[in-house]
Amino acid sequence: MSVAVTSSSSSSSAHSHMGRSRSPEDEKYYLRFDDDAKLRDWMFDTQTQLRSLDIQAIFHGYDLFPIHFPSKGEQESKDVYFYKLNIHDKSTLPELLVEKYDVVHVRYMSIVILGQQWEGAFGNCLGFLEPGGVMIWEEILFDEFEMSDRLEYPHAARIFDMGVAMFIRNGLLLNCSPKLTPLFETNFQQSTQTKFSTTNLNEDWQRLQAKNMYMVTREMLMKKLEAGAKEEAAEELGFGSADEAIETADLSMEDYRKGCLTNMTICQWIGEGFGG
Image (cartoon, rainbow, N blue to C red; front, side, top):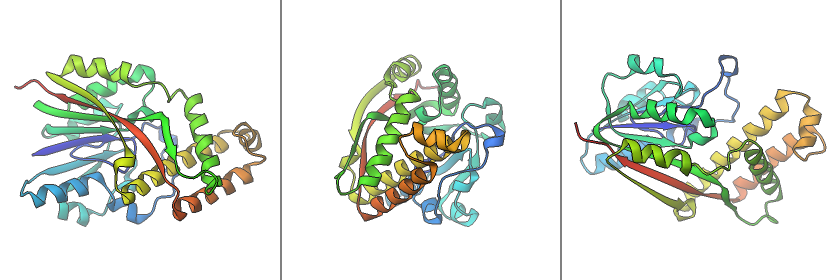
């Protein structure tokens, strides 16, 4: 059995995990990334579950930023392997793929796919599948975020609101359904679309999701401050100064450590391919 995952964040992957699209000069990764996070990976968890059922599988994960990758020893011990790849760059696929995959898992790509890029990115992912394989694609519905007690966690609430405002300005609150549903209906023998909330996860996983969203939002803030005049950018984001923006982001991390949770609704498409 082989599995493929494409994702814009390090919290998920499988036999194939393709990462964010950035220019070569933007190769540096700006998130605060701890070593422990490298082992909190969808592929490792899934591999453990499959092995408990005596199901053998090989997982390949792809990401644009190798800083995410666990050690070679950890990869080999789990049959989980990672490679650098850009979801938009089809020319890199043949040299990496020596076989196709039974499952492709795509996650949170709307953050990095522009309107005119959806069909191309979808086609690249589709090229990973064996005939009769299954593709799973998940996207966050940014207009359905939820967070815990805003009065108890004011710094996280402020950063949260800033992030949502930036998502709106960047056009990321647009419904992905008009883009993905026709692609699934056209390219698969059978397809389904469902929604679920991270509130149904256990608390540890909710906390991991909250941390992931904090990291993405903080990266957006830092990139905004670094893109031009810091003070003007801070004012545009609703802060009195760049120092205040950075301090608030740091304090919001403390709120998450104290127990603040950020939950989201996720839309999932599943397509079953035509047999070969």
